[in-house]
Length: 305
Image (tube, rainbow, N blue to C red; front, side, top):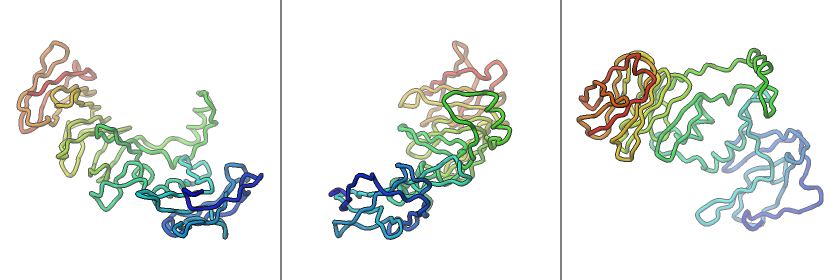
């Protein structure tokens, strides 16, 4: 209780039943929408408190009862939430509820890079756009279509029933897997892309593209620099194998001329499929090669020099 600067009167009832009541938010949480308490189950009970520290600020109430507080502690902030913040990403009630996300956002748990006016934190982007975004330790950003607003109607359980799944999908088809990304601000980058299913990319410190994975795409635009890989949609995976970006692997499912950005100031490259050399050209910061039916879908080894 000293951590939050509040006092809670313990009793044998383990909280108060508040089904049907609303939680309202104020002060630093004033932008958090009201939340309705759905049930009288134990998880939905509330735990009202009174403040014991003059520095504690009330941020949430149920009627006149305090159920949320904020208290600055050293370099951090301690928040007390005496209720269950709902967070429903499947629209199971016909609408999305995201109180937990809104609370964490108000508490600055999802800081942006500060490069844009929009918050480009991947978790924030995932709950406010059509895309689920994540960032990996090496700096790679991955994006997929987010189905958080697609209402679930499957029967659940821990095993699959193909017949039941087919009926559920027929009644409630999944949205298209097409990605149509237009100037999305994510992890400090401005991204435009069109493809299917998923896309992942990585840039160096200067913002230059150094790795990419995409499905049925022709290229990607990062910070207004257009990287055109092909004239027709292909599946492409282009990834470095070492920290120095000298050795890469490439896999293209499709056919035609493929153009890829080379790392650093590489002027030459050795390109092989197994022991066979592959004809290519390194020019103007790009490596160009032709993928035919024989090379489509196969891994190609690249060593830049």
